[in-house]
Length: 255
Image 1 (cartoon, rainbow, N blue to C red):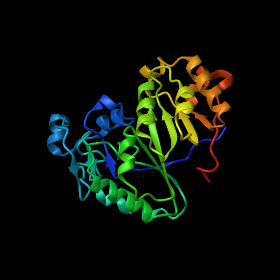
Image 2: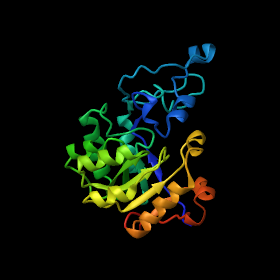
Image 3: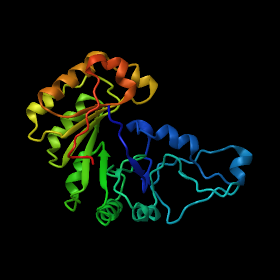
């Protein structure tokens, strides 16, 4: 088995609400919020308004002096000062872009997306993995670096149908984390002119893990085998997947 090694690069975090089940929503809410003296005295950390925020420099905790990672909690927050972080990475990395948000979400201004794409293009030493629930926005940005790999986050059949309707040619991998219902991947592959180069399955939070049925996993595994699509399952799926558990890494996507 091979372990995935990614570095997270988060010039943008958060979203407008939790309805989209962002991977890091719980983490952001637990540690976020500007922790100044008033915060520590009142323990009142609520600051989510749904607004889009831009921070040109880090905010620091007035008690401990450390940077506040998510000063507006789950509100979408763009931190352009983090764009330069790529220049400090001197060895090739697989980088998960905006892992704690969704860069291509409809609430993110196009100018912000262009700035992030430009920063990635200016540091070609690395491979960049983008992931979104809104693949139609990929079509708005023809300027894409050859070392950028675009994926779509799926947790139900309807999202595959939506992807099929958008006909986005740049999607190279699919992430199903969690699977909240049975997903007929075979149906999608038969109808789509574009075959993903890689599939990743995960469990998400515990309450979603309990929904996943072993037969859903075995069906996905058999479909990937027939279509020769590398499939990577995260460790918590081992018991559920049984003999179908696999951790395949597409060699064209990693080094």
